[in-house]
Image (cartoon, rainbow, N blue to C red; front, side, top):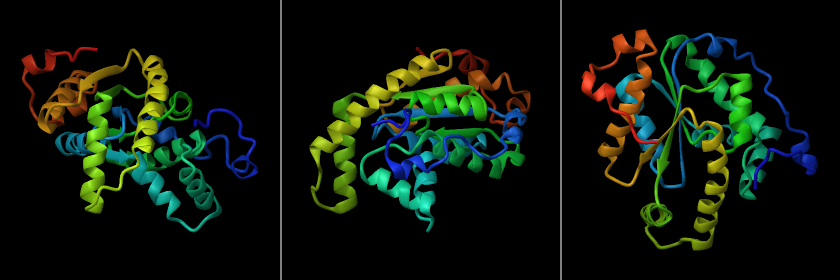
Length: 240
């Protein structure tokens, strides 16, 4: 269930509906911002970490940011924990502010940002664009439902050393992702590059790098500092 509409829950009604931090430094930073979105098990975290290592970007994993906030002993943390336990998304204003706050911690580094698992809803994308700024690239990791299910099952078995999987929960996770994702892709249609995320990790990484190289020509400082890339590689465009 989304959180773009006003909630009738008195607990969530107490949460802020807009962000309360000054994001001017991010708006004026002149660094690339890249979003990586994809279904559960698509490989977002792995890709973001590899990209951050290659280009020197700051990687922001939305699930880690949320988990860190929930671990705090605050009323807001309690509310977020309850929402997550009920399968709901973190309210847009909360998540956008958490992402922006993380960016502000590193904005003086003058590095780019690659954000995994964000936005999760169209309203989060619109709020980020309004309160922070529009991203420069949105990488969408395409994975078939059956592959996502297999990856999630393998991950569950590896983590617990036993087959303790709720198949209906996995199915619902994937269905909910598709419902939300098609609206995000449409909203960011001029920034989206679709990446086939079913091959091996290195193949997916190389395809993502081709798209990143294409936008970095607009950032002279990054063009000079990043690893050398051939003109042939820079000219390749990932099919949309």
